Image: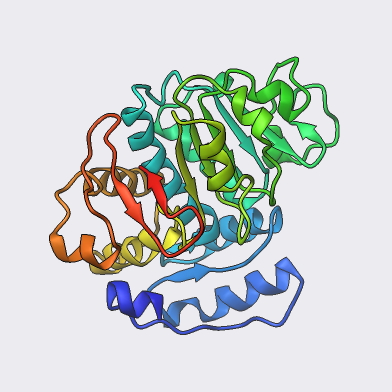
Length: 296
């Protein structure tokens, strides 16, 4: 439905009844030539990385795991604009990513492609900071092991410019939010309950930009902004893959699109009085949910 509604692409949902990565890869590889592209869905880490890579190598059509790359593209596009509004830039921002699953690792990889400094990204999993002294890391987590004395979220969040949450509910406290640098950016994207609720976040700080993964709050980070359209483009030019330059092109396109004038019909539809792309601009959002007056 999402592919058809947003990109006018005919899509077929195919369920593969196996828990074996090898069987899944073999099944998809055997039927791939029937289709113009394959969108992988709801495959957990770390299996998703190996499955996608194997299918990219074996198939002659685009293979794309939207839980990884769709989330990453929209996250990076939103973060670039949010940092600009806050008077900061990606190249120097200190970033804390709580979560080390498919979406988190893909998002941090794309942040590096977009210009973030590897030494400025601290990733945490359920056991704490992913650092060079740990011996329990798989190869995907190990890529983000840093030489840092930080061991906990309390340590990592001190002075951070950005918090990206792709983990679980209520894992960022008001005290930890208070420890971040001036004018922070918080993307609390755990669904359905974010790492910190916007009501609590705005009650704690008035200088932040806040986003969640939920559609009933303003500033939703939603991969549907990306994956139907990147497939539309790929199919239109008969691409054989979706590569890093294509992902970065999508990041730039979404970031620039957010700065275009918003037509009155759209603002009326989402009950917004004013939306402009300027540093520290303010728009009053009126929503039928708790905390219905929010700043963007």
